[in-house]
Length: 438
Image (tube, rainbow, N blue to C red):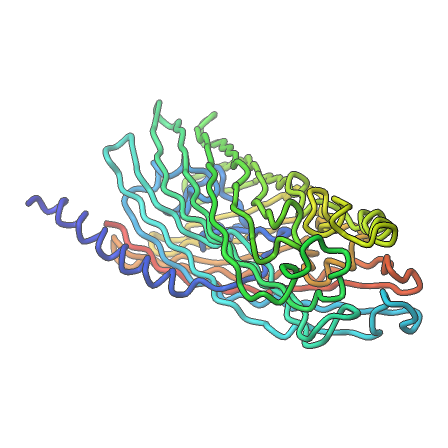
């Protein structure tokens, strides 16, 4: 057997072993742009999440599958150590109604999470590649050691994690231009606790809260283009469809449409400019369509319609605005547009340095703070840095550091307007990775 064939078999075997280890580490996280991660590969994380026009490793399909044909034969593995610090504060009048909250500040207990990512790319020939990218798309976790909502249990919070498995194909159609497609297989896990106080406005109160973790599977796709449009200037664009998930049956009384929780569509476009070979500037724009998923987008105003129907008819099943209904109460999130900037400098054949910044207006209106106590996706700004250290010709170590600046959103408690609720979060993330070129 030719040596290249042996190397390919060995690479597939090693990749399979690491794949099993990755799945064993999959855990829950709290992401940064709403509930999407700011970046997926360790290198893109260091660039503020940018990379639609700058493929750097076998996680490139997470941004733009067209880039996979430019990264060569390689495998990448990384672990992120993620530290979201989230809390809520209630001020104003002392509790006086069934919808009032206890005054004071409550911090979420769970503080550290491990998030793995893994990718591999095989060149079929110089113009065609097959890849596999595996990464946590996002998630949300809160764990308040208190009965937050009236009538609820302790602790209160949610535990949502999402995993994408993306086989991809990319082809060069002309020198410096390529197209790619990734087929997304998605898995998500969800649990919520402490919402018993909302049982009266749920169409299915037995499947509202405290039912342990439920699992959901689904599918979608991402397509992309990448090309050198002028000497040293690259343009990339990609679009990810909505990822259609099967329902969370154990939470059919919480999410709209009997437990439906699809993953929203999004697109990204970016530029990469190399004034000299050692220096690259990158800029991305990403838009996430949270408004297309009813469980995420429906606002709390439906509560009044639901409650009025319950008071009149005695049953939440008579109102589609009630929890679990086709128009059921959700988190009220808006669409989110994120701007990402990064710079990469190769100071020597062995060392490459990166830095980045991103900004996106957080998706939670001030009228929606009550439900978002358990889902406080309020982060807007990230600053990042990192490096790569080559080890010989076939290996490298990678590192990225991210800090998400503290941000707050405050608004009235819609069930007791004499109270104000403030949601607050800041984040740290450290990512270490290893790459093998085969």
